[in-house]
Every structure is written in structure tokens, then in C-alpha cells.
Image 1 (cartoon, rainbow, N blue to C red):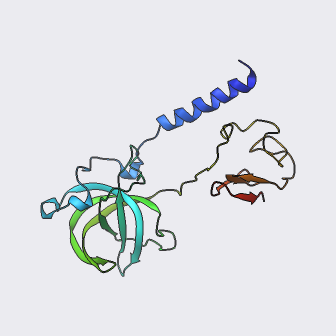
Image 2: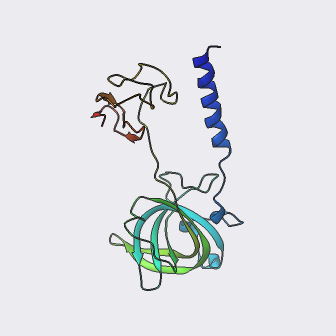
Image 3: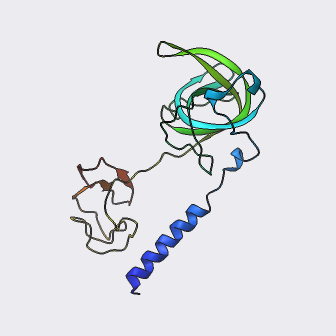
Length: 206
């Protein structure tokens, strides 16, 4: 096995090891019910200690608390929401804390733990909706995901020389001043930061 292949195997093994070490954040850990979703909540569910997550629909700061309307999604093994078309319902999580609507913006993923306190009537569009209301003990805002749209089989292998068109250096770690060029699928800055680009498009490296 040559040096190039050895490094590639080590890199892949490291990534798999990191995936295997994923755990629930400490502020979300504990015994909480995930046996039912917001769409299944009833009056008999009031008082239950639950852990729900999803994406922000709207963040509404009030005088003594902030309430966040959330579109529920299933959670993975780390309690992070998984993008899904399942209709799990919506819920409202309130906490006596200020959450800035410019940070907790529509579409951000979060997970909350707390106690189901009741229901609140509202609307989704013109449809009358009954929202389960959770008194949140913790609100965990997840980092934004970075998605790479590329068919490049060497994307995870940063030390291949001369593979990237119009960009001299070693993959994500270029030597010297970055050059400009085009590549379909993703954009790379000289700092090594990757930004997602729609497949089939080209962007200038800057």
C-alpha cells in the first residue's frame, strides 16, 4: 500500500471514528419521553417530560420570556433533528430567557427539553391550529449544516497535488496566494472554507 492510499485510509478511519463518538449534548441528556410527537399530544400528555426538536418557524420575544414556534422533526442518536417530510406537527417552546430572532431565525435546527404545560390555539395561515406548549428547561441551537454538492471522489482527501483545476497547491491547503478559478459543485476560499453551491453551477474561487 503506497503512502497516498495509507493516508486516505487513515483519514477515512478518523472520520468514521468521529461519527461513532457522537453523543447527546449534556444540556439535552437525561430521561425524556420521545414516545409521542406534537401531533399526537392530548390532554393526558400534560405534565410529561419530553425532548422534541425541529426547525424554527418563528421566534417571538415577550416581556418575560421568549416563545419559539417549531416544526417538529424526528431526532437522531445525538438528539439533533433529521430533515423529514413526516407530518409530526408543530409546537411552541417558551423559556424565561431572551432569544434573539436574528439568531433563532426561520429554518434553524434546535432541540428542546422540558415539560408539556398545555395547549394554545392559533393559526397556520388561515387554518386554526392547536399548539402543544412546552415549558423549556433547555433550548439547544445546532450549528448550521454545511453541504457539499460534488461528485469529486477525492474531496475528503486533502493532499492530492494538481487535481483541482485552476488552483495550484495541495487541495484544501494551498501554498502561497490563492488563484482564481471555477469548479462545478462547490467553492473553496484560500482559507480552506467550503461553501455549498448548487450542482451544475460554477462560481469563482475568491
